[in-house]
Image 1 (tube, rainbow, N blue to C red):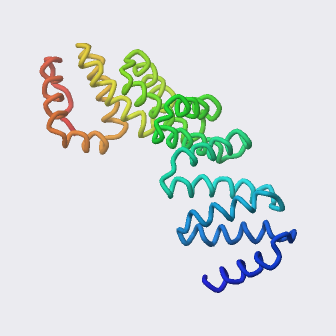
Image 2: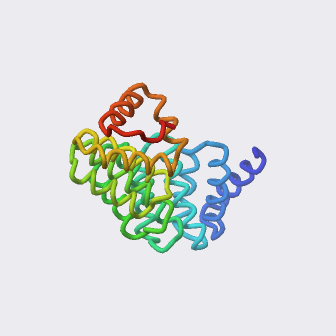
Image 3: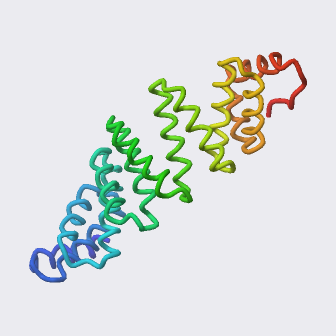
Length: 232
C-alpha cells in the first residue's frame, strides 16, 4: 500500500545505517515487486543483500532480483542471477529451476554455450526434477537448430527413455517420428509416432491441425502398407 511504502521510505531515509535497514529494504523490495515496479524492487533487494537478512531471505532476494530482471526484459542479467543462485545453493530445491531459467535467459541473450551448460547442469545434477525433461528438450532443440542430427537423436532418445510419461517425451517421440520418416525408416517412425499418440493424444491431436503433418501422416500410412490406428 502507499502508506506502507511511505513509512518504509521514511524509516530508511532517517536511519540508513540501522541494523534494521536491510530488513526494511527487503520488505520494501517485496512490496514494490508485487506492485510490478521491478526496477525499484531490484535496487532495494540489492541493498538488502548487503547484510542483515536471514539465510532464507537472502535466497529469496536473489531469486526475486533474477525474476525482476526477466520482467524488465534483461535476460542476460536474469540468467547471471539465476545461475549464481544455483551455484551458491546447489542443494536448494529451487536450484534446478534456477539453472533451467538461467539457460532460458542465456538463450534469449544469444549466449548459447552458457545456456547449454546450465541445462546440462539440470540434466546431470537434478535428474528427478520436473525441470530435467525440460532441460533435455531445450538441449535437443538447440542441437536441432545447429543441424547436429546425431546429437538430436541421442537427446530425444534419452528424453523418451528417462521420462516416458512427460509431455517433453511425447514431443520428442513426435520429432523422432519425423526424423525417422525423413531417413526412410518408416517402421521406427510409426513406432515413435504411436508412442507419442499413446502418451499424449491431445498434444498430437493439436499438432495434426497442421496440414503439413496431416499429409505426413497419410504418407507414413501408405509407406507402411498396413492399417494403423487413425490419426488422433
